[in-house]
Image 1: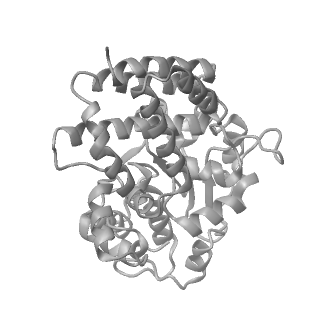
Image 2: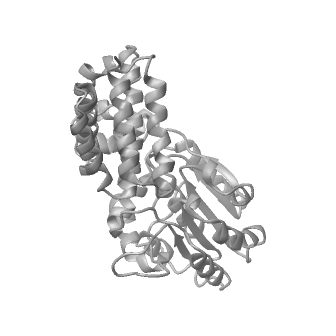
Image 3: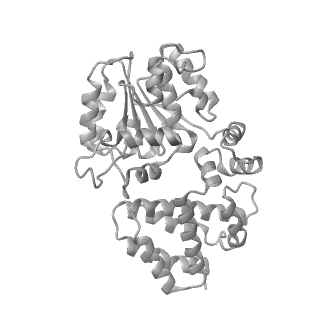
Length: 373
């Protein structure tokens, strides 16, 4: 990955390049921000720049043996860790190495993707984690000498999925790493990263992508100028969100259809319909259930903003057309309680609560909030 292929973040690119030129690269850095801001792409470009044998003033050369291997994600001194779980093929003790082919494919094909995209690509419908078995693998790899570069670089994607056991095993390694070892952590939720890990890293906060860079990148994807401008504005600086607005991914479309049905049944006070809806939602996997609830929170929030005639609404084309009619039902009288009810369900689902009971309870409460007596 070259810096020039990372969308926006120009100020951060310059800062990272200067750390290499001035030989002050911190051994443990954490990139914070939603995946659409580009934490993973910029960490990969940074790693490639560090390892490049013929780097330029503002980017890797792209053609030296090190860059060629980085471009294929097969450099022997570049290591990855990411959340995984059991599958039909991997039935016990899953670790990142079991899924490296799928990881390379999604990174090279998409560059920008989120946690749900990753789980779908490896065929799991539950939350992944970074286990103690993974920590043992990390300890083994990083105690080896570098093969080709001066440094070994370990990229840990979503360290919030480290459990306490694996985090504690890594703690000593992060405090006193083997020589020539660099850690890059990529997180969307720094508040969920265990404090013992977080406190020992240098924080790098990614900001929303600037509009000009976003529009330029979207134009390269062959979208027309009007759609590109609108998607850039609605995305809030999130490139992944902009692409989703323009392409309307299958999962987003399913979430939207489920949300519309939920709101209509609630407004119609259709109890039997709501019970059927809850049954349908409980039949999907937990990750999809959480993803829907997060999606629903966003739509509720944006509909409330639209109702207040604010010019800062981040809705896709189909979402906006529907919201023009629906937003009047989301007011200051119910927005807080609706949002709270959705937010309560997320940890309940994460903690393996009974999904049917959770969605049934949510549905019965929502009908009272959307159309109170």
